[in-house]
Length: 525
Image (cartoon, rainbow, N blue to C red; front, side):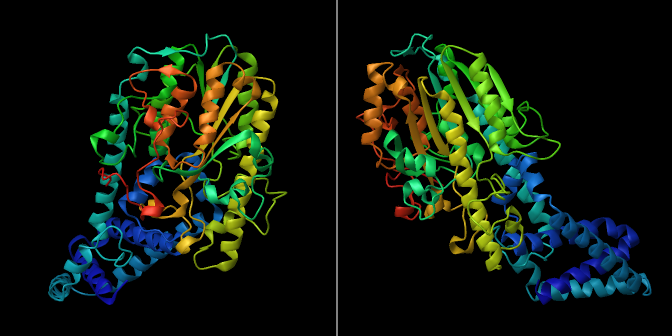
């Protein structure tokens, strides 16, 4: 906070007290609380309250908030609140001794001097990404405006998705299955896993021993780009025929024409099931997280939707999901499509065996201890992140091994990566992440021998997937690849985006090798 900011705040507090007396506390306590919390976020997490961050906060689930509602953060919040209240009461006690007219004149003269020096003009016009001047009066209108922009962004996304026609509305056919083969398709959208932290991809630590040992049996796409740092946007781009981030203003050629791919599988006899961490809420509800409401749109045609985790203890480790999934598979028959989403490597990196971690020293609490300034916290946070990836490797093993002997196709893709110390960044506060390596995510396909033998087309499709394993790809490829692998013909299918088609073309959107820019000249903003 600059001296000019302090002077401006002092004059405004004097003016408000001269006009409102102690009622001014109703204005200044929330204001100073916001200032204190903003400063703490900058210190602890190196984040500023811009529209991008606020939109993530609005979209966060209760589980996300629960992980940050630890004793440290709650204690800091209480300390800031007590300090703000005490400081104001002390200041107002000083003001009380002066006549009201004198305070009013002094505050007006002081504000005029500050305005004359350019204080208010300079600091109230700061951009949203500016980290200085957080104590200026401009935050009074910047923060509500930031919230309004973020809320409007999420609402527009809901409306856009709700207006998309179902891909099952147009005629389609499937050339490979009748409906009674017992085929299982699993689309697992993981959380916050970056490709370069997998030992499968050459990372020095053995974070994925099971996947690495089965490398010859899987298809590992080594250059897959996440479309967004927000789970909602990434998941929707994965599930629809959008060829870009659905939240962005993009060229018409890239925008989604239809909704969830699960709909077309349901239309062809697949029993569709969704497995989520968060509670599924009605999209029209104004409470609950954005993702919870969005899940209602995602799973509208699902035969069953399941959530996992212990809400009493706050335990949302992914393995709690496995018994639910296996029970559903045991109790159902026919062809089935499973959509899985769980916390995976979501910050603050708690989803691993904390009693027997593979990489030490480690603690999920270390992310709250300012790793951007604390080397010990940085080491522990990085280890915690690697432990979560090791845990995801175990999850995939425990999910698939009971399915031996059954025809299944398993696709794992992460919604986005996570900064783990690059450029001293430890949280997803950088919207230009396509310039960084943490926009690169794993895309892994595993097919059982029984699936490959089920139909000649499946063997051909898997051969094409293997041939395209080094092709640059992105979230936008998954919708069309699912249709292509299963031989589903529909007007929404595009062979150029199908990784199982000989006609597939490389991804041309924003990429780190191009400094975050697309190569095709299409509009990405």
